[in-house]
Image 1 (tube, one colour):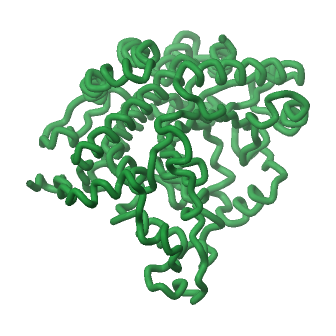
Image 2 (image 1 turned 30 degrees about the vertical axis):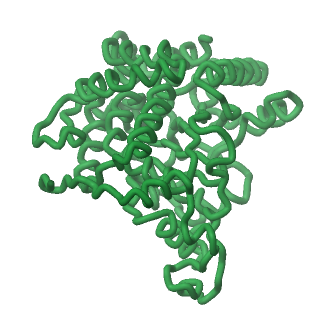
Image 3 (image 1 turned 90 degrees about the vertical axis):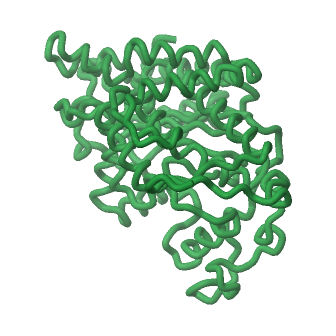
Length: 425
Protein backbone atom coordinates (compact mmCIF):
# COMPACT_ATOMS: atom_id res chain seq x y z
CA UNK A 1 0.00 0.00 0.00
CA UNK A 2 1.28 3.47 -0.88
CA UNK A 3 0.02 6.69 0.73
CA UNK A 4 1.54 9.59 -1.17
CA UNK A 5 5.14 9.30 -0.09
CA UNK A 6 4.49 6.75 2.64
CA UNK A 7 5.10 3.15 1.60
CA UNK A 8 5.09 -0.12 3.45
CA UNK A 9 8.43 -1.88 3.37
CA UNK A 10 8.34 -5.23 1.65
CA UNK A 11 8.55 -8.10 4.13
CA UNK A 12 11.84 -9.88 3.52
CA UNK A 13 12.11 -13.59 2.90
CA UNK A 14 12.82 -15.65 6.04
CA UNK A 15 16.48 -16.02 5.04
CA UNK A 16 16.82 -12.24 4.89
CA UNK A 17 15.17 -11.83 8.30
CA UNK A 18 17.69 -14.21 9.83
CA UNK A 19 20.52 -12.37 8.11
CA UNK A 20 19.48 -9.15 9.84
CA UNK A 21 20.16 -10.78 13.21
CA UNK A 22 23.13 -12.91 12.16
CA UNK A 23 25.01 -10.03 10.55
CA UNK A 24 26.18 -12.12 7.58
CA UNK A 25 26.73 -9.75 4.70
CA UNK A 26 28.99 -10.13 1.70
CA UNK A 27 30.90 -6.94 2.44
CA UNK A 28 31.71 -8.01 5.98
CA UNK A 29 32.90 -11.37 4.73
CA UNK A 30 35.02 -10.16 1.85
CA UNK A 31 36.01 -6.61 2.80
CA UNK A 32 35.38 -5.69 -0.81
CA UNK A 33 36.59 -2.38 -2.20
CA UNK A 34 34.53 0.76 -1.78
CA UNK A 35 32.56 2.50 -4.47
CA UNK A 36 30.36 -0.43 -5.42
CA UNK A 37 32.61 -1.25 -8.40
CA UNK A 38 35.06 -3.63 -6.74
CA UNK A 39 37.99 -1.49 -7.89
CA UNK A 40 38.29 1.03 -5.07
CA UNK A 41 35.99 3.70 -6.47
CA UNK A 42 37.22 6.80 -8.25
CA UNK A 43 40.73 6.55 -6.84
CA UNK A 44 41.07 2.97 -8.06
CA UNK A 45 42.54 1.90 -4.72
CA UNK A 46 41.09 -1.00 -2.75
CA UNK A 47 40.67 0.61 0.67
CA UNK A 48 38.72 -0.97 3.47
CA UNK A 49 35.83 1.16 4.69
CA UNK A 50 36.19 2.17 8.35
CA UNK A 51 32.67 0.90 9.11
CA UNK A 52 33.68 -2.70 8.36
CA UNK A 53 35.75 -2.84 11.54
CA UNK A 54 32.77 -2.96 13.86
CA UNK A 55 31.78 -4.20 17.29
CA UNK A 56 28.12 -4.98 16.67
CA UNK A 57 27.23 -8.04 18.71
CA UNK A 58 30.45 -7.95 20.72
CA UNK A 59 28.49 -7.43 23.93
CA UNK A 60 24.92 -7.74 25.16
CA UNK A 61 22.30 -5.78 23.18
CA UNK A 62 20.52 -2.73 24.54
CA UNK A 63 23.33 -1.50 26.76
CA UNK A 64 23.24 2.28 26.77
CA UNK A 65 25.58 5.27 26.85
CA UNK A 66 24.85 9.00 27.06
CA UNK A 67 26.93 11.95 25.85
CA UNK A 68 26.24 15.55 26.88
CA UNK A 69 27.80 18.85 25.82
CA UNK A 70 28.07 21.44 28.60
CA UNK A 71 28.75 25.16 28.44
CA UNK A 72 31.34 26.80 30.69
CA UNK A 73 30.21 30.18 32.01
CA UNK A 74 31.68 32.92 34.18
CA UNK A 75 30.54 32.86 37.79
CA UNK A 76 29.52 36.54 37.74
CA UNK A 77 28.59 37.55 34.20
CA UNK A 78 27.38 34.08 33.07
CA UNK A 79 28.94 34.74 29.68
CA UNK A 80 30.80 31.84 28.08
CA UNK A 81 34.46 31.40 29.02
CA UNK A 82 37.23 29.45 27.28
CA UNK A 83 38.24 27.17 30.14
CA UNK A 84 38.09 23.62 28.88
CA UNK A 85 41.85 23.00 28.81
CA UNK A 86 42.22 23.67 32.54
CA UNK A 87 39.31 21.36 33.30
CA UNK A 88 40.75 18.59 31.14
CA UNK A 89 44.11 18.94 32.87
CA UNK A 90 42.38 18.55 36.22
CA UNK A 91 40.26 15.64 35.01
CA UNK A 92 43.35 13.82 33.75
CA UNK A 93 44.52 13.55 37.36
CA UNK A 94 41.19 12.10 38.46
CA UNK A 95 39.03 9.08 37.71
CA UNK A 96 37.09 11.17 35.19
CA UNK A 97 39.91 11.60 32.70
CA UNK A 98 38.24 9.23 30.22
CA UNK A 99 34.76 10.67 30.77
CA UNK A 100 35.44 14.29 29.80
CA UNK A 101 36.62 15.51 26.39
CA UNK A 102 37.05 18.75 24.46
CA UNK A 103 34.84 19.93 21.64
CA UNK A 104 35.22 22.40 18.79
CA UNK A 105 35.22 25.47 21.04
CA UNK A 106 37.07 26.01 24.31
CA UNK A 107 33.85 26.99 26.11
CA UNK A 108 32.42 23.48 25.62
CA UNK A 109 33.02 20.40 27.76
CA UNK A 110 31.78 17.04 26.47
CA UNK A 111 30.96 14.18 28.79
CA UNK A 112 30.32 10.51 28.10
CA UNK A 113 29.18 7.73 30.38
CA UNK A 114 30.65 4.27 30.42
CA UNK A 115 28.77 1.44 28.72
CA UNK A 116 25.81 0.98 31.06
CA UNK A 117 23.66 -2.11 31.50
CA UNK A 118 20.54 -0.03 32.12
CA UNK A 119 19.30 3.51 32.75
CA UNK A 120 19.83 3.23 36.52
CA UNK A 121 23.51 2.59 35.88
CA UNK A 122 23.62 5.48 33.42
CA UNK A 123 22.02 7.71 36.04
CA UNK A 124 24.68 6.92 38.62
CA UNK A 125 27.46 7.56 36.12
CA UNK A 126 25.94 10.73 34.73
CA UNK A 127 25.26 12.21 38.18
CA UNK A 128 28.84 11.50 39.19
CA UNK A 129 30.20 13.09 35.99
CA UNK A 130 28.04 16.21 36.28
CA UNK A 131 28.88 16.54 39.95
CA UNK A 132 32.62 16.29 39.35
CA UNK A 133 32.53 18.68 36.36
CA UNK A 134 30.51 21.26 38.31
CA UNK A 135 32.90 21.14 41.28
CA UNK A 136 35.97 21.31 39.04
CA UNK A 137 34.52 24.25 37.13
CA UNK A 138 33.81 26.17 40.36
CA UNK A 139 37.37 25.64 41.50
CA UNK A 140 38.49 27.28 38.26
CA UNK A 141 36.11 30.24 38.60
CA UNK A 142 33.47 28.85 36.25
CA UNK A 143 29.99 27.37 36.35
CA UNK A 144 28.58 24.44 34.39
CA UNK A 145 25.49 24.90 32.22
CA UNK A 146 23.43 22.65 29.98
CA UNK A 147 21.22 24.20 27.32
CA UNK A 148 21.39 23.75 23.57
CA UNK A 149 22.33 27.40 22.91
CA UNK A 150 23.71 30.03 25.27
CA UNK A 151 21.09 32.74 25.77
CA UNK A 152 23.32 35.67 24.78
CA UNK A 153 26.99 34.80 24.14
CA UNK A 154 28.39 35.41 20.66
CA UNK A 155 30.23 32.79 18.63
CA UNK A 156 32.67 35.46 17.38
CA UNK A 157 34.11 35.69 20.89
CA UNK A 158 34.85 31.98 21.30
CA UNK A 159 38.24 30.32 20.84
CA UNK A 160 38.71 27.17 18.80
CA UNK A 161 40.14 24.23 20.74
CA UNK A 162 43.82 23.63 20.01
CA UNK A 163 43.46 20.20 18.41
CA UNK A 164 44.33 19.32 14.83
CA UNK A 165 40.89 17.81 14.20
CA UNK A 166 39.15 21.06 15.08
CA UNK A 167 41.58 23.27 13.21
CA UNK A 168 41.05 21.17 10.12
CA UNK A 169 37.28 21.36 10.62
CA UNK A 170 37.39 25.16 10.73
CA UNK A 171 39.67 25.24 7.70
CA UNK A 172 37.21 23.09 5.79
CA UNK A 173 33.87 24.56 6.92
CA UNK A 174 34.92 28.15 7.69
CA UNK A 175 31.96 30.26 8.91
CA UNK A 176 29.75 27.19 9.23
CA UNK A 177 32.10 25.75 11.87
CA UNK A 178 32.74 29.05 13.66
CA UNK A 179 29.00 29.61 14.06
CA UNK A 180 28.40 26.16 15.55
CA UNK A 181 27.98 27.32 19.16
CA UNK A 182 25.39 24.69 20.03
CA UNK A 183 25.13 21.89 22.57
CA UNK A 184 23.52 18.49 22.04
CA UNK A 185 23.03 15.14 23.71
CA UNK A 186 23.54 11.74 22.11
CA UNK A 187 22.15 8.40 23.22
CA UNK A 188 23.86 5.15 22.18
CA UNK A 189 22.10 1.79 22.31
CA UNK A 190 23.88 -1.46 21.47
CA UNK A 191 22.41 -3.54 18.63
CA UNK A 192 23.37 -7.11 17.67
CA UNK A 193 24.36 -6.85 13.99
CA UNK A 194 25.27 -4.30 11.31
CA UNK A 195 22.03 -5.00 9.43
CA UNK A 196 20.05 -4.45 12.63
CA UNK A 197 21.74 -1.07 13.00
CA UNK A 198 20.53 0.02 9.56
CA UNK A 199 17.03 -1.37 10.14
CA UNK A 200 16.73 0.44 13.47
CA UNK A 201 18.07 3.62 11.89
CA UNK A 202 15.27 3.45 9.33
CA UNK A 203 12.70 2.62 11.98
CA UNK A 204 13.45 5.56 14.28
CA UNK A 205 13.21 8.19 11.55
CA UNK A 206 9.54 9.00 12.09
CA UNK A 207 10.23 9.34 15.81
CA UNK A 208 13.04 11.89 15.41
CA UNK A 209 10.70 14.92 15.24
CA UNK A 210 8.94 13.73 18.40
CA UNK A 211 12.26 13.28 20.19
CA UNK A 212 13.33 16.74 19.08
CA UNK A 213 10.04 18.20 20.29
CA UNK A 214 10.45 16.53 23.69
CA UNK A 215 14.02 17.81 24.02
CA UNK A 216 13.69 21.40 22.72
CA UNK A 217 15.89 23.60 24.89
CA UNK A 218 17.27 26.47 22.80
CA UNK A 219 14.82 29.37 22.36
CA UNK A 220 17.51 32.12 22.48
CA UNK A 221 20.36 33.05 20.17
CA UNK A 222 22.66 36.06 20.53
CA UNK A 223 20.46 37.65 23.20
CA UNK A 224 17.18 37.37 21.32
CA UNK A 225 14.20 35.06 21.51
CA UNK A 226 14.22 33.41 18.09
CA UNK A 227 10.62 32.16 18.09
CA UNK A 228 12.07 28.65 17.69
CA UNK A 229 11.82 25.95 20.32
CA UNK A 230 15.12 24.45 19.08
CA UNK A 231 17.39 27.05 17.55
CA UNK A 232 20.19 24.50 17.77
CA UNK A 233 18.52 22.25 15.20
CA UNK A 234 18.49 25.01 12.61
CA UNK A 235 22.04 26.16 13.34
CA UNK A 236 23.46 22.66 13.07
CA UNK A 237 21.50 22.02 9.87
CA UNK A 238 24.08 24.09 7.98
CA UNK A 239 26.71 21.40 8.58
CA UNK A 240 27.36 19.07 5.64
CA UNK A 241 26.36 15.45 6.09
CA UNK A 242 23.89 16.39 8.81
CA UNK A 243 20.14 15.96 9.15
CA UNK A 244 18.33 12.83 8.03
CA UNK A 245 20.39 9.89 6.77
CA UNK A 246 19.88 8.67 3.20
CA UNK A 247 18.28 5.33 2.50
CA UNK A 248 20.57 2.31 2.15
CA UNK A 249 19.77 -1.08 0.66
CA UNK A 250 22.02 -2.92 3.09
CA UNK A 251 25.07 -2.55 5.30
CA UNK A 252 27.10 -3.32 2.18
CA UNK A 253 25.57 -0.28 0.53
CA UNK A 254 26.31 1.91 3.57
CA UNK A 255 29.90 0.63 3.80
CA UNK A 256 30.48 1.30 0.10
CA UNK A 257 29.18 4.87 0.37
CA UNK A 258 31.29 5.69 3.43
CA UNK A 259 34.31 3.93 1.95
CA UNK A 260 33.99 5.91 -1.27
CA UNK A 261 34.02 9.19 0.66
CA UNK A 262 37.00 8.07 2.72
CA UNK A 263 38.98 6.93 -0.31
CA UNK A 264 38.39 10.21 -2.14
CA UNK A 265 39.27 12.32 0.90
CA UNK A 266 35.79 13.75 1.35
CA UNK A 267 35.82 12.58 4.98
CA UNK A 268 38.44 11.22 7.34
CA UNK A 269 36.22 8.43 8.63
CA UNK A 270 32.55 7.73 9.37
CA UNK A 271 32.52 10.00 12.45
CA UNK A 272 32.56 12.95 10.04
CA UNK A 273 29.02 11.98 9.08
CA UNK A 274 26.77 13.92 11.48
CA UNK A 275 23.29 12.59 10.76
CA UNK A 276 20.49 12.86 13.33
CA UNK A 277 20.81 9.10 13.76
CA UNK A 278 23.73 6.98 12.63
CA UNK A 279 25.39 3.62 13.17
CA UNK A 280 28.50 3.81 15.34
CA UNK A 281 30.37 0.66 14.26
CA UNK A 282 33.37 1.19 16.53
CA UNK A 283 31.05 1.11 19.56
CA UNK A 284 28.55 -1.37 18.15
CA UNK A 285 25.65 1.03 18.71
CA UNK A 286 22.95 3.02 17.02
CA UNK A 287 23.45 6.67 18.00
CA UNK A 288 20.57 9.15 18.21
CA UNK A 289 21.86 12.71 17.90
CA UNK A 290 18.79 14.81 17.13
CA UNK A 291 18.12 16.01 20.68
CA UNK A 292 18.98 19.29 22.42
CA UNK A 293 21.04 18.82 25.58
CA UNK A 294 18.91 18.89 28.73
CA UNK A 295 19.35 21.28 31.64
CA UNK A 296 17.84 18.92 34.21
CA UNK A 297 19.50 15.55 34.53
CA UNK A 298 16.10 13.88 35.08
CA UNK A 299 15.08 14.95 31.58
CA UNK A 300 18.28 13.53 30.10
CA UNK A 301 17.57 10.18 31.71
CA UNK A 302 13.92 10.25 30.59
CA UNK A 303 14.95 10.74 26.97
CA UNK A 304 17.60 8.04 27.26
CA UNK A 305 14.95 5.63 28.58
CA UNK A 306 12.60 6.60 25.73
CA UNK A 307 15.34 5.90 23.17
CA UNK A 308 16.36 2.59 24.72
CA UNK A 309 12.75 1.37 24.80
CA UNK A 310 12.17 2.54 21.23
CA UNK A 311 15.21 0.61 19.98
CA UNK A 312 14.05 -2.55 21.77
CA UNK A 313 10.57 -2.15 20.28
CA UNK A 314 12.06 -1.99 16.80
CA UNK A 315 14.42 -4.92 17.37
CA UNK A 316 11.52 -7.04 18.60
CA UNK A 317 9.46 -6.14 15.55
CA UNK A 318 12.34 -6.93 13.20
CA UNK A 319 12.95 -10.27 14.91
CA UNK A 320 9.24 -11.11 14.47
CA UNK A 321 9.53 -10.49 10.73
CA UNK A 322 8.09 -6.96 10.66
CA UNK A 323 10.75 -4.64 9.25
CA UNK A 324 10.26 -0.88 9.62
CA UNK A 325 8.36 1.06 7.02
CA UNK A 326 10.30 3.39 4.78
CA UNK A 327 9.09 6.97 4.50
CA UNK A 328 9.77 9.79 2.12
CA UNK A 329 12.51 11.92 3.70
CA UNK A 330 10.70 15.08 2.64
CA UNK A 331 7.80 14.25 4.98
CA UNK A 332 10.08 13.51 7.92
CA UNK A 333 12.09 16.68 7.27
CA UNK A 334 8.89 18.73 7.33
CA UNK A 335 7.95 17.22 10.69
CA UNK A 336 11.42 17.94 12.03
CA UNK A 337 11.15 21.58 10.99
CA UNK A 338 7.77 21.86 12.71
CA UNK A 339 9.22 20.31 15.88
CA UNK A 340 12.12 22.75 15.93
CA UNK A 341 9.72 25.65 15.46
CA UNK A 342 6.86 24.75 17.81
CA UNK A 343 8.19 22.06 20.16
CA UNK A 344 5.50 19.92 21.75
CA UNK A 345 2.78 22.03 20.11
CA UNK A 346 4.09 21.21 16.64
CA UNK A 347 1.36 20.00 14.25
CA UNK A 348 3.08 16.89 12.92
CA UNK A 349 1.94 14.64 10.11
CA UNK A 350 0.94 11.29 11.60
CA UNK A 351 3.30 9.20 9.50
CA UNK A 352 3.48 6.22 11.83
CA UNK A 353 -0.27 5.66 11.46
CA UNK A 354 -0.15 6.36 7.71
CA UNK A 355 -2.95 8.92 7.97
CA UNK A 356 -3.13 12.22 6.12
CA UNK A 357 -3.78 14.20 9.27
CA UNK A 358 -1.78 16.39 11.59
CA UNK A 359 -1.55 15.83 15.32
CA UNK A 360 0.33 17.73 18.04
CA UNK A 361 3.76 16.30 18.82
CA UNK A 362 2.55 16.03 22.40
CA UNK A 363 -0.24 13.66 21.33
CA UNK A 364 2.08 11.49 19.24
CA UNK A 365 4.50 11.27 22.16
CA UNK A 366 1.73 10.12 24.49
CA UNK A 367 0.66 7.45 22.01
CA UNK A 368 4.20 6.12 21.68
CA UNK A 369 4.64 6.29 25.43
CA UNK A 370 1.74 3.89 25.91
CA UNK A 371 3.47 1.42 23.59
CA UNK A 372 6.80 1.76 25.38
CA UNK A 373 5.62 1.32 28.96
CA UNK A 374 5.52 -2.51 28.86
CA UNK A 375 9.02 -2.46 27.35
CA UNK A 376 10.19 -0.13 30.12
CA UNK A 377 9.13 -2.71 32.67
CA UNK A 378 11.30 -5.30 30.90
CA UNK A 379 14.26 -2.92 30.84
CA UNK A 380 13.74 -1.73 34.41
CA UNK A 381 13.44 1.94 33.43
CA UNK A 382 9.76 2.64 34.17
CA UNK A 383 10.46 5.44 36.61
CA UNK A 384 12.71 7.23 34.15
CA UNK A 385 10.30 6.79 31.26
CA UNK A 386 7.46 8.17 33.40
CA UNK A 387 9.35 11.45 33.53
CA UNK A 388 8.27 11.95 29.90
CA UNK A 389 4.76 12.51 31.26
CA UNK A 390 6.13 15.36 33.38
CA UNK A 391 7.74 16.95 30.32
CA UNK A 392 4.49 16.63 28.37
CA UNK A 393 2.49 18.22 31.20
CA UNK A 394 4.95 20.88 32.38
CA UNK A 395 6.82 21.78 29.21
CA UNK A 396 10.34 21.43 27.86
CA UNK A 397 13.49 23.33 28.74
CA UNK A 398 12.67 25.89 26.05
CA UNK A 399 9.39 26.71 27.79
CA UNK A 400 11.14 27.06 31.15
CA UNK A 401 13.77 29.42 29.72
CA UNK A 402 11.08 31.63 28.20
CA UNK A 403 9.17 31.64 31.48
CA UNK A 404 12.25 32.85 33.36
CA UNK A 405 12.92 35.54 30.75
CA UNK A 406 9.34 36.80 30.62
CA UNK A 407 9.27 37.42 34.37
CA UNK A 408 11.90 40.21 34.32
CA UNK A 409 13.01 40.44 30.67
CA UNK A 410 16.52 39.67 31.95
CA UNK A 411 18.54 37.46 29.62
CA UNK A 412 21.38 37.06 32.16
CA UNK A 413 18.89 35.66 34.64
CA UNK A 414 18.13 32.92 32.12
CA UNK A 415 21.80 31.89 31.96
CA UNK A 416 22.00 32.01 35.77
CA UNK A 417 18.97 29.73 36.08
CA UNK A 418 20.46 27.31 33.52
CA UNK A 419 23.63 26.98 35.62
CA UNK A 420 21.67 26.49 38.85
CA UNK A 421 19.42 23.80 37.38
CA UNK A 422 22.30 22.01 35.66
CA UNK A 423 24.25 21.72 38.90
CA UNK A 424 21.23 20.67 40.97
CA UNK A 425 21.93 16.97 41.43
